[in-house]
Image (cartoon, rainbow, N blue to C red; front, top):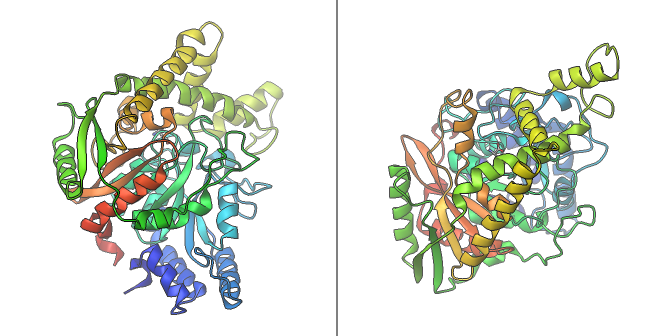
Length: 487
Ligand code: GLN
């Protein structure tokens, strides 16, 4: 079997049994990136030279007896994680040539674990979007059908993994940006509990919501890499001091029964897309093979999550992105006439339309006279949404939901209708407002495009999510499907 058809877990055993070297695996993926990246625009910056240096170092470590679990395995990084040696663009003209003076904790931890970085992947500008169309570097394309979006904002990472240009990739999820592209591209994506993964060196969009995670082929593959990503980091003030389990071992345990799975009544209404409803019923039938009980759960404030998110996220973004002023780093306009002109033209020329829209909304919501009516109110509603989940988890182990209202949409279809675009996050944003862990896994296809099933877990209980997802994947093969041109 060609190396790009192997799961991360099987690439690990090829390395461990010395049937393959990291250099061979890395060269294989680099060649695929060279030949196929143009078709999907998954990578903004492939890094072949650095990758081969890391691969040689990994082979050397292995020759000296090191058998670390991730040693020599390739990965792609969303271009929102700062990397000292390689430019970090965040999909923006503002950071087109930006080289960070330090690396993010996420990339640093994976480097130390011996992973080989194949390059930096495309994303919506500053992670604002649901389609990767707002990237300064052009949209990524869905490997299942190039006329469709791969989702966003981690669309480049999703396209890279689905097109078999990398066996796994990092992403970030502020309101769904790991789960939604995972759903659109037929992948397994996990957004950990807020605070589980350090945000140090991850360019901030909305700091109280942003969380790094992974997109891969299966729950097993994601679990394999996840433990190295997680853990307390003194450089991130919101990093949690929770012990990190061995997630891979957690996937392999026998099924713990009985399990109670909650179905939010607010999601399973008449408005739910018929295909999504049918595929979820099929998934429930599969899960019923174990001693699983499905119960309705009331989350009374769920319907307020889109307006709440689209106030809080832009408000935090307007504060975070004030640092891009043409003075400190990033883009600077030509021949500024005075300080005001410098600020104004730098931001006017450096940011794209969607980012500007968010900055205007956010600045407005935070301004004197409106703060109480909008921002404070949104924070209060956020607490209600969070409380709903806390109450629900007193009676259920996991909550099951759709990942997205439909499967992937056409490139350009929602570009000029921001509200329609925002509504595509309807099933994902509440999880970020509450800070919970959640994942999306493939549950079937419609018109040749994948659909995602969402599992939401209790705080710091990623293990239960990965375990259930792995059980589901041991009985289904949706996650093993490969887009036609990727053979
Ligand atoms: N689609 C959402 C937004 O545009 C979520 C983005 C994200 O999770 N980074 O804000």
